[in-house]
Length: 428
Ligand SMILES: *Cc1c(COP(=O)(O)O)cnc(C)c1O
Image 1 (cartoon, rainbow, N blue to C red):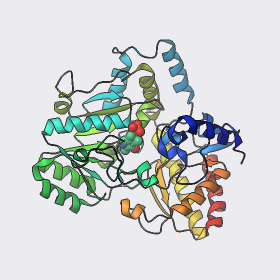
Image 2: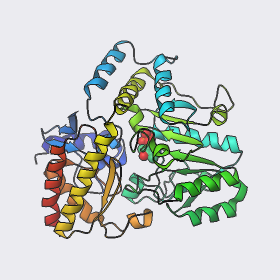
Image 3: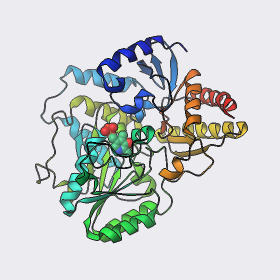
């Protein structure tokens, strides 16, 4: 594979950007080699600056559920851009996207749009602390909730990839208010509540963990969290930045039938533009300024371009058959990969929830951070590079989700499985 131009651009980028990138996992540190510079995307395919074409399972890390440059989204964006990109004043588009989100997620009665998932979670925590008048939060090992201070404790995503347990620059006083439990371990959550009793403002959880690789909740886990928070007067916050409109139109609420008090969103609801959102029960959201005293603001929040991309994407997802199509393609990919690994004698544990999945290079069931880390990351690196050579673009880390989009065809899946067969054969 010719990657000369990408190499040149990366050398140049490193002079000006830390690590040559604007988000750490993009730098390929965990898989070796240099990142490819992307020129364009169309549907499920992306093209790098050296003219190589790939089937893309990163989808910008989740947002592009409709595929790249979906014509309806692009058309609507062009039209919106022509009318002005931001006013810092209300537009009808914000109400329209809010209506769509609230209709899909009945536990959300009011919603506030922000510019990223990080900002959404940060704001939801501030609100939870104000509402409960408590400071502590419980999160889970390997859970990633953006890079806000206090949430970088035993976090997943890039921190797991790069082996960073805690980030310097976070005051100890912040981190002290973050309690961590193993994912899927209800007993440890109960112990935490016993120890800190009335001090816990909220339990913050990815209802399907997706930043240590995909790890679905075990039966009873989310129900247990709902119960223990309710009993103690703490709030339950579902971080649905990945799962919202991904695992079902109504996200985790629809799949698991559990109402969180607050829900954070991002990724898909921005359709590829920078958007986040937090929402929940009316009495809680009424505390947000200007209705209430909890301050949170944003110069570009709810801007017309981001709202437009979100609206068009969600409308597309609302069409009959959209999730059935995602499920069919994702099941076909997962089944193909499992069979190929078994045939080659490569131990593989594949976790999947809807169109998000992670094949872990381990023979153990992956139910939490510890078991996720039993994966052979060296082997993943080899697999990653082998797939890239064969035109398949995967997340450059064992601990991330692969995303199937509406644009992936059965042909794309077939090509991917054929490539995996070849690469697995070389691994065993
Ligand atoms: C990506 C992610 C975030 C952070 O969102 P950004 O838009 O990257 O700031 C928060 N929570 C979860 C579950 C995520 O996957």
